[in-house]
Image (cartoon, rainbow, N blue to C red; front, top):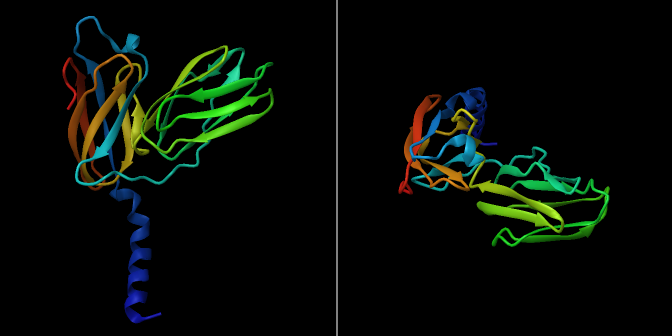
Length: 204
């Protein structure tokens, strides 16, 4: 190994413990500024980051993700995931089920499979994936562009952790409410506090 390469390796090893400290955090509260609308009646809300200067790429998580079929229903009926993650869909019901979605480009059809069997689907593309099966009410998956997303709490609070420094657009998704967005700048190790207001016509 050359002298310059040894110095580079030593530098990377020396900086490794400080890597996580360079990440920031975006947190705040979402409110609804539309007459007659409220968070408690809107259903799940997801906030996520998009890169402004370049696409935001995150490591693909290996966390277990699952939507069960049980008692003629999906459980859970809503799931937020990152692009590239895989969802396992076991059949715990007494009858055969066929889970599918027509949402291009994340469309899929798992075919009929009996109780005790499980099939899975990897979701590569951001977007909304309504999922159904015969005799079951639909479930919804929202595929965020990266792992830098959060599901908003019932009180409107959200927190997106371990965000690399950069310029981002913070966006919202909800099945009923119009989208909202806001530019945020994340510095090394610095928390960013921002409040989002969902209002009619805010779709930047």
